[in-house]
Image (cartoon, rainbow, N blue to C red):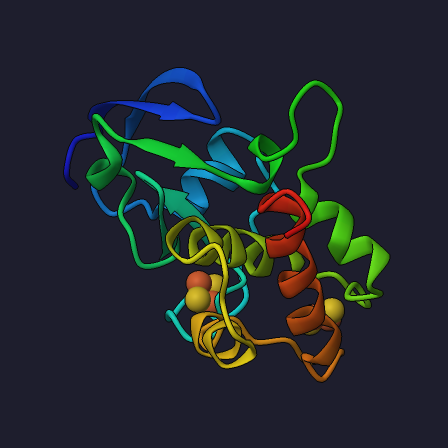
Length: 160
Ligand code: FES
Ligand code: FES
C-alpha cells in the first residue's frame, strides 16, 4: 500500500496541511477529512457536476481530481463563498429565483456559475447554458437556474 503524502493547500482562504492517500480524491478529502459536506458526490465519474469546486479559480469536478494534485493550490467550496455571514449574490439569486428543489446540484451549480461569471461577466442565455452543461439537475428543468445566473451577473456588474 502506498504511503500517505503530505499536502499544503489553501481551502476557503485557510491554510491546511494534511497527509492524504495518493489515491484519495479531492471530493473525499473535502467531505471526509475536512467535513466540508456542501460538496456533493453524485456519480463519481465526472458526469454530473455535483462535486464542482473551484481549484485556482477554475471549476473542476472534485471527484476527478486527486487531493495530492491540489498541493500548493487554492480551493473554494460552497462553504467559502459567503463572507461575514453575507450570502454571495449567486447564492441569494438562486434562492430568490426558486432554483433549489432537492438542492443536491445547487453547490456545484453555483460554483460552476461563479467560474463562468468570473470569465464572462455578461453572458448570453446560450453562454450560461453552455457554461453549465456539465452540471446536471434532475428537478428544475434548468429554466430558473439560467434566469438566476443572468440575474446574478447583473447584480455583480452593479445592476447594469
Ligand atoms: S460526483 Fe463528480 S461529476 Fe458527479
Ligand atoms: S434541485 Fe434537485 S438536482 Fe437540482
